[in-house]
View 1 (cartoon, rainbow, N blue to C red):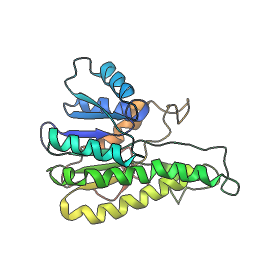
View 2: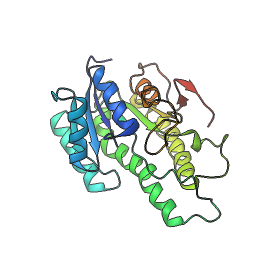
View 3: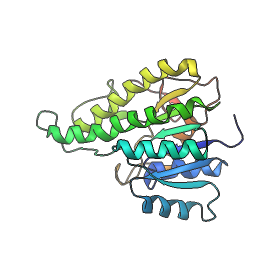
Length: 233
């Protein structure tokens, strides 16, 4: 592994994404901390890295093709590669909804971020990941997306994460020959704005994501993990 890697974390101005960015920067890596609003990214980066040596705040709306393509071009021009892509941005833990009655427009909106946003970002940054000797894609998923454990509730969120898991498997198989490792990570129930209060510390949830981002070249690919241990699809 290179001494200093270049990582991009989506939705990194708060919650798990912010903590992932902090932990990667703490390990000496250069992190593009992205948010839908540049001001939010700058504020988070300034709080975590006042000297501006490790965190590089950038605007990124993963539901906007132009935004994604613009940042991919900027990263190509400034860095020439991307070592780690953490697809963290997600919305709508719709715990009060039911599949039998949910507004399908809301489901579609959820998929636009949780699945298509991640998919779009992978496609845009794949040439830069291929230029790396440490290509890693980490899709932040959820136990809610596990078919084995799935039950009633959170229909938009759960199905979007199940679809993200499927995308993880497909990408892992396709990119194996490029030596890019692709894994889905469930951070567990974490105390964040989305997860609600009462979960475990955000640092613990983020640690499993950082583990996947820093896997050695002979590490697993196409897996679904929590705290570095496989969990059921």
